[in-house]
Image 1 (tube, rainbow, N blue to C red):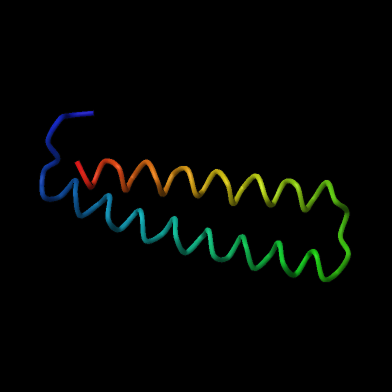
Image 2: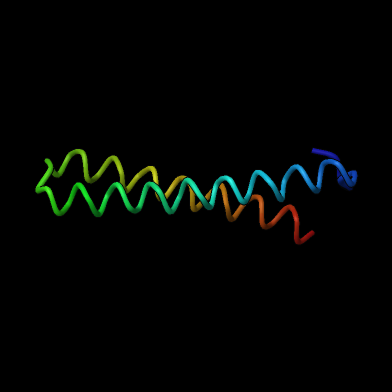
Length: 67
């Protein structure tokens, strides 16, 4: 990735970060619903992995924007 983001690139990353945060909250909500419905622990684990991945993506985007 280039050392310096263009204005369009920075705005694109900010919008993408907002989308990732939205997905993260939705994935957490689905996980909570699944837990309440006593869904298989394998499914709960997969949903937890999705949330962790989205957290990592959010952290990476935040790191790029902070630089």
